[in-house]
Image (cartoon, rainbow, N blue to C red):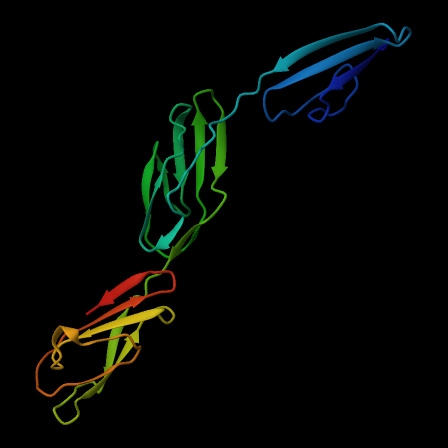
Length: 220
């Protein structure tokens, strides 16, 4: 009515704090108070309170035991929305989308991943949740061994070993040699060890490389 002035509280969810008709966008259930004053008789005021009930989509509560590790990295995801969600969809990027209440997902390739969860609530509301921190998967070395000379002989038998990998240098090396006369005790922790072989034959060499993130790769 043009004869009354209206005041709304709280006004931060409304398009205006005054007026007989207002619109609002609420983030949750809100209690509103409205008062109407007679313009001709300001001392005459009536007030009323009412509640706007806003339904909420399921709110995932992920508690990961880890979010970083070496490839392949398996993580258990439990959004704890089973009581409020009718359908839960996990999005791990690309085409990796799965519908499940909980899931054990393996990240096979190194990289940084964003995880999103879409929850369709039993109350008809749908929400999109994004994990507030990334999943980080560190690479293994993808190790291999080269040696020189390529074909050792009994006269050219001092062999130099060189680790080769798809990624940067390892943080640590551990070599294990056989056929050098030292038995199981023949090991080395330097990058390019040398060994002399006195007799003809085939001798296994094992290399264990560890990255700065603790990712271990073994090659024989």
